[in-house]
Image 1 (spheres, rainbow, N blue to C red):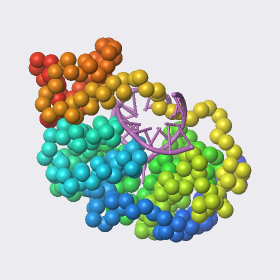
Image 2: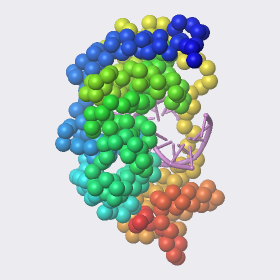
Image 3: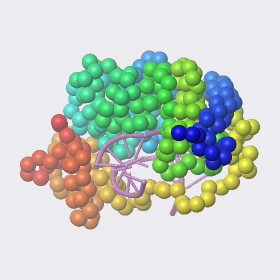
Length: 312
DNA sequence: TACGCGTGGGG
DNA sequence: TCCCCAAGCGT
């Protein structure tokens, strides 16, 4: 096997050398910036522990920090350890989830707490593969918990980091719709060698994307790596090509599911079908949404046309 | 791989 | 107003 001979810049060895040099230019400014500008978030404090980090990561999947904060505090006060949550009915997790959205996350967090209690003696596992095996934990969250809670060296590739890399390194305004192998490879190549620095870099590059290198109205004047940013140096060309995939518009089952579940969250006794019928006028869509909630395990049907949040 | 899955705030 | 976006996951 000989090395590919396409161009000097596309050979793997050359790409790694470029990444090494690039990383050296990026790590210190970003980490130093983080030292000065990191938000004081409760799950970043030492007392949060791995469980606090894990709870925050579930809640932050597609939900802004400002909305997570109050729910996070209540959650940790009520269920300070995984076993505390595992001892509850899953419906209680769904109720406490409130209006964070995507309530299946609450069910999965409950399921993860049960699995941690059963399989890991009640302690959040530190092993990446064990984390990945828990319900609701995918590639990003496993890396995030291992890195933020346990200081391990992992590529933590969330939407913020992907955007920072797309701009600073690749020179485009936005990353692709779905995470690509090239992005993973780049993230690994840019990871500092030593463990504590890698963990710091992961948090710092995320924070840069969240506070400075935002999706809209990025503020390059506050960016510690503006001088090296490929996108800025190229004149910040606008995204071209096919439109970025947005979320499908409201009026869908999602909206109906939300209304149905809101009724059940606020009720502390089984709710009759007639009460649910009032949230949406169109019966076919209403029935389909309710069926979906039941099959997802978010709603438990009882005899006599009654419904409630799941007791088991 | 592309899609479905909540909710609310800001430009 | 409307549209876009917000620390993804599971299928």
